[in-house]
Image 1 (cartoon, rainbow over the protein chains, first blue to last red):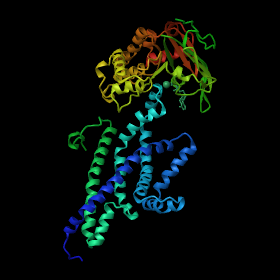
Image 2 (tube, chains in turn blue, orange; image 1 turned 45 degrees about the vertical axis):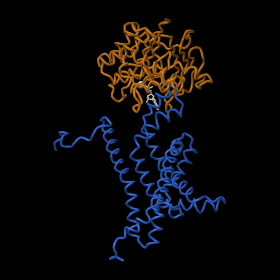
Image 3 (spheres, protein in one colour; image 1 turned 180 degrees about the vertical axis):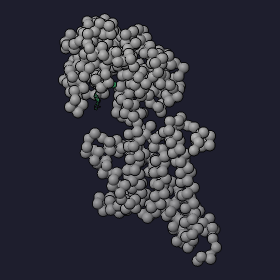
Image 4 (tube, each protein chain N blue to C red; image 1 turned 60 degrees about the vertical axis):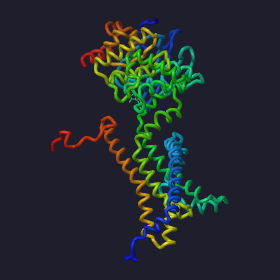
Length: 241
Length: 265
Ligand SMILES: Nc1ncnc2c1ncn2[C@@H]1O[C@H](COP(=O)(O)OP(=O)(O)O)[C@@H](O)[C@H]1O
Ligand SMILES: [Mg+2]
């Protein structure tokens, strides 16, 4: 085995399948991200509600998804939920539901800390101009919370993008499923899983770079400088040891 | 102007029938401590009232109760002839009163993610239903009134403190209030800048007939531009008089001591 040559021809032959798998992966990721980013707003609001029972329910939801494995959540929705309700949910839909429910829980916590970072005085200014609670959220709180939490939101999205590989276990024909199938058929595990890893990396890595960029920018803004300036070179700051 | 001097007392009753804002017997506690202890307070249309008093005496709480940012336990508030608060609770006509009252804060509270224009037109567009064109025309006028016309496209984070505060005043004016509540709006500003901002208020009173209620430590402005000086002490109005009476002829020892202390600062 170990002395066999690489056979990238097998990968080339299976390339159309891998591409269609990548399409499925990207679709699942895109739908999940968009839905979670919207649904997390009401969950975060509920988590901060003045009504105790509402706050409690939101927290329970968040903790359930934070403290159980993603794979178990996926299996639960694909296999267990039909047993409970009698309704079978197709693999693709199950995947989207499970990933969205999971990402929404994490995203809601990110939003919450973003919401809490908006000074209450800014909200009072909105109240004095008679903006409704919803308008305060929509125009004052959410935009600032999003901006502040961009690095966290991006890294949550990267994690979720990688976690989409789990959906191959419920027969969704995503990139991982196609790579696994081709590897099994051709006995070329090394080539196919290396290719799959490279494809995931090529998508996640630029987002990861972007995350670091926003983190640096956020640090600069917090240290009291205008938000969009290049980091100063340390040797130019004049600080002597 | 109705300025019956009411030296050294805070007797209830005789709210002027022409009052724009009339609050009777406001009571508010925080953690069992009476922060407003039966306050009667009224504002006539077009009048500048200056509220002075030690820190913690309840000045901000009075403004915040009138503004609706705090709910009192007790008290009636009438705004422009309509009862908006009865026995401490908001009445069904609350919005009628809210529409007449604007507020400006010490910390400006501009929304930093929007430029000046967007800060100004958000509420008029959403609440008053103005078109983009109408709102922008109104914003240009409001900014001109506070001397900030050239900054309409600036980001609020690029402005100085005095400029931010003038934009905050313009933003409040966009809703066409009849009374502007100002809570220590110049406390974070250097004296010349503070004088400029207060000058804007004096001009708005002169030209627009805007009533102003100003909590400040600026005695110079109080004696020059105020129609009334109200001295707050322990959740009560201890003195309600003209500036001349309050600063030169008042026998209230506490007020005298307070004025001396502020002058020395
Ligand atoms: N939201 C609040 N919660 C608890 N205590 C408060 C609150 N707001 C004001 N207080 C207290 O009420 C008192 C009066 O406050 P305030 O009206 O801000 O006084 P002033 O504006 O005259 O300095 C202070 O002792 C303050 O600590
Ligand atoms: Mg105060």
